[in-house]
Each structure stands twice: as structure tokens, then as C-alpha cells.
Image (tube, rainbow, N blue to C red; front, side, top):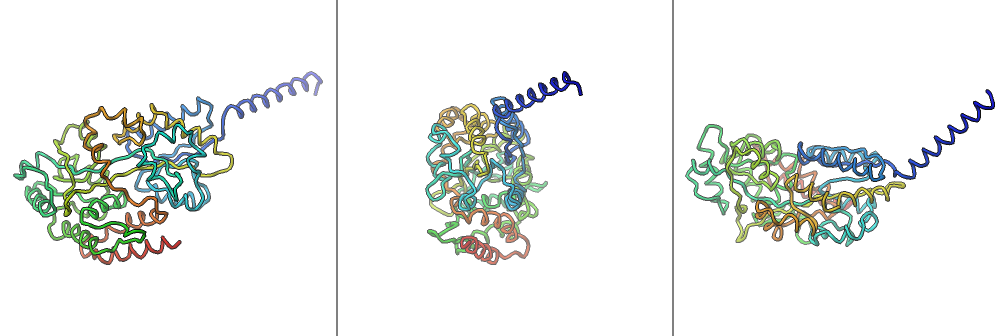
Length: 410
């Protein structure tokens, strides 16, 4: 090799190394971000755009994975069992990961301004042993939806307020024939724990009594028997409610105009408004109590501890929590805010008033208990067995209780 050629190659190598160092110093490491799919239209486009914005602002590459709610729990469990957790995860539970020491506390991955912007109730819901690990990403409050046209045809002047009125209304709606369904009951694996929570609370039961799991309490047995009777004795639900999911099952039937009543939330209202096919009303849940109870839900972002990823994760999270970004995401999906700045921006939307009004009195699932992750998955997979023909509500709840006690003892 000539001296001139050798010198030229040396210059090229140095230049390449210099460019590589420059790129390495300007960009952080690649991170894996796992997000639950809230909608086909908005979830992937928003997070893909955020990942691109992160890259243009000097972040590294984002391995973005959008996973549907039906399978995200199982897929994430497999990732963690294989010692391949994501860097950032969006899910509706977090505390077992915090208990196992897998997560960064908020102070290590959020700027003080971002952390201070959280609404207090949602920040409290993301704590494990007094430390914030589950970073609120969005919230919702459930409400009782009814089809105004089907109600008019059935001679129903107003939504039911009590369980007796509810059964009477469901029977009248079912009697319309032509495929009409009184109530869409989703106890399939997508989100059975949410449907169950609302009926359980309005039947006078709860998940826990103090610090002790109480899934098999007498009020809960009565409530699950009531739901089983809707399907098998009164026959006012869709076929096979124990395997029906919320989004592609109960919600879709309501959007198709086939269902008289369903438990919904603001994203469902947004879809109904956009499609314009169903005239609907929104009311409080029918109850056996003096005052109706509803479910408030907050989902979370969480940051897993991995070698040399903290600064990259912090940059990504602070980008999402910029008021313009988080408000655009929550508004697009039709959810409710979890930050003070977001609440101020979204108060002006009159369509959100019923849900914003419900938030202060809504109850939350026991997400701060580390056993909840296992309990939730168990309920999702098995509570639907109770409403199948020949199902035994007490046996199902007894087994769920035993499993919850075992999970708490881990």
C-alpha cells in the first residue's frame, strides 16, 4: 500500500470515528417503549410522532411497541420473566413492579415541574409505600349510557336508578325483539375487573376489608349472582357475556344501536358523537345504595431500571408531560386530565362535564397493593365463568379470594 493511500485511509478512519463520537454524544441510547392501544385511530400516530420528536431533540432511537389491551398484561409479564423489561411501560397497574425494586421513583426520572403538575389524587394513586412510581398518564370516570330511541320504543321515560328498575328496563328492552339487547355485560378478559368493580361497589361490597382481601364477601356473592341472573334467568344480556370484551364487544354492540344500556366512558361518547348513529344519554349507575358509586381509572407510565437508561428515559417522559403533548394525547383519545395544567385546558369542553363532575366521588381499584397485578389478571381470566350457564358465583369468588390471599403472601 502506498504511503499516500495509507495516509488517506487513516484520515477517513479518524473522520468516521469522530462522526461516530459526535453522534454518540448528541444522542442517547435506544429505549423500548410499550404503550397500550387505546384506539386504532390515535394511539400509534401520537406515540410515533412523539418518538420522532424525541429523536429530533437529541434522543436515541425509540423501539415503540403498541399492544392491544387483550394481551398486554401477558406480553409484559413474559418480557419481565425473560429479563427483558421495556424502558418505559404504559399499563393500569404498577405496584408489584415497585415492590420488586424494578422501577425508578418519580424523583429520578421526572423534572420537579412535571411532578408538581400532577393532580394530587392521581399522584396518590401512583404511590407505593409513600413513593410515586406509577406516573399518571390519563384518567377516566365510568358512566351509565342508554339508547334514547330504544328507551322510547320500550316506553321507558328515564334511565333506571335502582337495580329493580334496571331489571325491569332491561326486560322491556329485550322484549322489543329484532335483536335488541337489554344490557351489554362485558366480563371477558379485556377489562372484567372494571365492570365488576362498579357492580360490586353499588351492591355494597368491596375488594378489601381494611388491609384484607374480601372478594368472597356476602355482598359480593349476591352481586355476582345478580349478574349471572341477568344472563341466565332474565336473559337480558348478549350471548356469552363471560367472554365478551368491552371494546370490540359491548361497546361495538351499543354503537351498532343494538343495546339499550351499557357502562361507558368519555372515549365511547366521543366515538358515538363522531359516528352520529346512536342517540344516547348519560346517567349515574343504578345502585342498591343510597348514593350511586362509579369507577375512576388512572393508567400509568412507569420507568424500569436498566443500565445507563435513566437520562434517556427522563428526557422521554418529560417530553410526553409537556402540557401541549399530554393534552393533545388525552383530548384525541377522549380521556380526562391527570395534571393541573390539563384540567385548566379541558374545563371548557362542556361534553366532558359529566365525567369531570364524577371524578371527585369516583372510587379506584386497589392498584397501590402489590398483589393487585395478579388479582386483576385472575379476575379478568376467571370471573366470567360465574355468568356462564351452570356457573357458580360463590365458587368463582371463593377461588379468586384464595388466589388473592396467596398473591398477598408472596
